[in-house]
Image 1 (cartoon, helix red, strand yellow):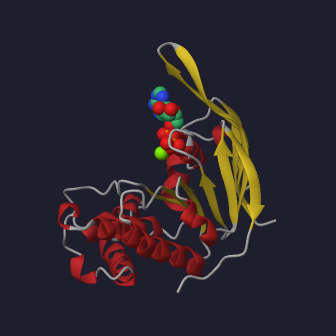
Image 2 (cartoon, rainbow, N blue to C red):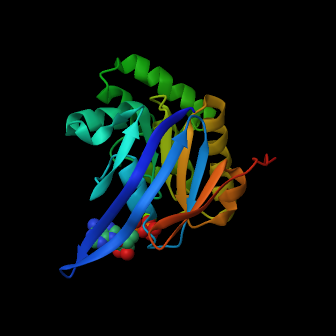
Image 3 (cartoon, rainbow, N blue to C red):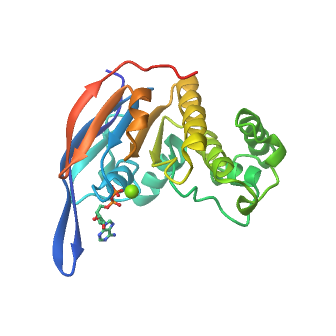
Length: 234
Ligand SMILES: Nc1ncnc2c1ncn2[C@@H]1O[C@H](COP(=O)(O)OP(=O)(O)O)[C@@H](O)[C@H]1O
Ligand SMILES: [Mg+2]
């Protein structure tokens, strides 16, 4: 029902000092349309590894990922990057904005990669800058933005292609508590208004109350999946 992304028995190890380091032991997860999923785990648990695999930025050792009823690993690297560009958005802990480009240019880039007309891309980026309360920061480069402003630009960049899913890796991990709460609210409201599914990994349990579905990453496995109602923050 409404399933867009299916993660099936994903396993991943790294090699450390020539010894295999098992990180993910068999992860299963369903991401449904418009649903907010939070994966909580301590530092080093494998959250970023899992998010990168779900977002097709990295490949697992084994297991499958089914996107829109198609197994993605039969696709070429070009097809995978096309899925990432058109259907997925990413928000990272350290914004990953391009330092030589202004806020508005950073937001436009995913559209320019799709060969969308420059003026159309600029118009869309402007609308999002307004939504994010950043229209008077549009020509600022990342180094001249505060931490919270950079993350709002990163949120706008993730939204601009109208993706089906946004993956967020500790998006407020680098912000103070108050700014973190503001950025969270902006991100959650933006995805909910647009019906975008959000997958967020974090060690911060504060996000639990914003989620439809929560799972804990413990010893390489997801435990205690459960659904809950969302409490609205005011
Ligand atoms: N490229 C890599 N090579 C070797 N070990 C790695 C690599 N990336 C991550 N690790 C290790 O895998 C574990 C999980 O990392 P990560 O997914 O970043 O955890 P988290 O995001 O939960 O903090 C950590 O112990 C980390 O040191
Ligand atoms: Mg991490």
